[in-house]
Amino acid sequence: MSRIFIGTAGWALPRLHRDRFPEATPNLARYATRLNAAEINSTFYRPHQPATLLKWAGTVPPGFRFSLKVPKAITHDARLVGTRSLVEAFLAEIEPMGGKAACLLVQLPPKLELDKRVARNFLAHLRERFGGHIVIEPRHASWFGADADGLLERAGVARVAADPPRAPHGGEPGGWGGVAYYRLHGSPRVYFSCYESDFLDSIAAKLRAHRKAGVPAWCIFDNTGSSSACPNALDLTERIGHPPTRVRR
Image (tube, rainbow, N blue to C red; front, side, top):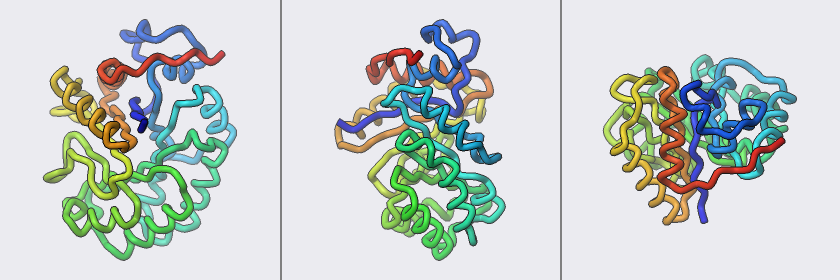
């Protein structure tokens, strides 16, 4: 059965919701008793010591998976052009995580338009070098048409379903259909709004549909500004019926 991965951007446990987790140390181990995925955003901003990533991978249970955000040096500074050496350095950095590094998130700058040649070259290299899931979160309208979906499909890269969406159909998965990745930033107030029950019910139904179709699905809550991501992820997990995992000591 295809897996459903639910988690947050980072693994902070807000004080108001810590009692929903069994006692465990370090904090990541406690987080991983109830949630089975986390998105590592810090890789976007700076390199990490391989030993740090190895430690994180060793802290979580066997079924836990990480999604890692591709560095801004690749996406925002170089804008996907001439990035082969940067990609190689990043992949070498995360190699100690092994299969726990299950997904790469490529978030693009809002003003970066689709250049088919640049996109094909970049994604082909990344796809050749990384065996896990690759998802892309574009934020310019040019990435949401049929041409862009076809390019992503051929590259084996899924387009993120984002909330709030940046373009028509941006709230639904696009591109390659081999994985679905929902990235929920909070709306109407981005990074702060808490999602209500009806919205979580709708997301749970979509995740179940992906599972029934044999498609792995991720749902990452990025509405961390008001400490809403953690309870939203827990509530969605309960709707899906994920059992808690054992504490790793």
